[in-house]
Image (cartoon, rainbow, N blue to C red; front, side, top):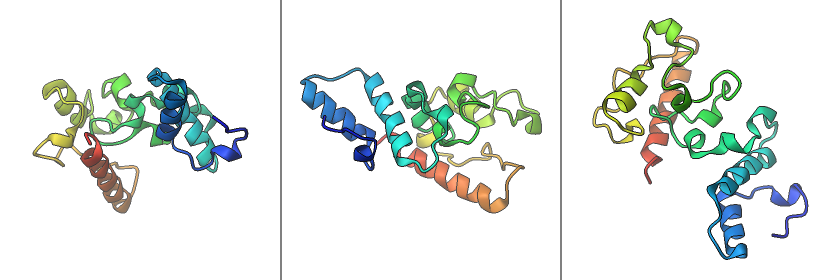
Length: 157
């Protein structure tokens, strides 16, 4: 494809690289190639990439697209070493110790009860199931909620 250095890949997006290779080969490639390009995009375009996040399998849709609450696993500081991702752990998140619940309330409602992929189309969004994280400030909680809602609004587009 003509990229001979890491520097030559700076600014490139995974979707662009995947489409470029598909065109070059004249067929649609396995999505695993897209996941690989996502890992490359992260490594090349991130100032201090986390080596633990550079494995291609961490760039599958389940970690890149919004989880039920709108958080994106790959962006979380706890992923993948301390948390395997919401869908993988089925809502059994580390912070349940603070709430006393058996499962994340958002995950339970969205996935287990309503059988939805995420809360993006729920009329009650955001509801009381979106709890305040007791380990961060009110301002950071508000910013996180705005980002999650923004992710959900773009999820099915």
